[in-house]
Length: 141
Image 1 (tube, rainbow, N blue to C red):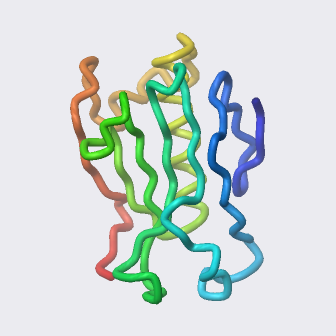
Image 2: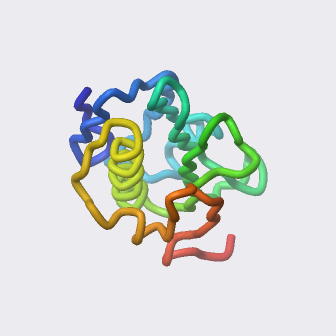
């Protein structure tokens, strides 16, 4: 399934979107869209649900405008230890990471290879060990 996310047409392959509350506009500031900034924005399952890419907005509290998008890759419903977890402070950054996450999961579930060195980029070994990393643009909230 090919779908435009924010800026990029993304081929989800055999993945399926099972939660889509992502209604963020690129033409408005995030402050103008705070009603849409929720913890559950987008979830995509791959490999019969073995892998889930989850996107949400996280801030100090519901009324705190400063926050970040968080994108996670979860394996076998282990939400407490995602394989990957990144904070993104812009829509462009979120879009870029979603493309990379999708490519990584498709490689694992479909024998699909677009970026042969994607494991190296995320520093993931073949056993899919836990990694928690944050964007190079990480900021203090």
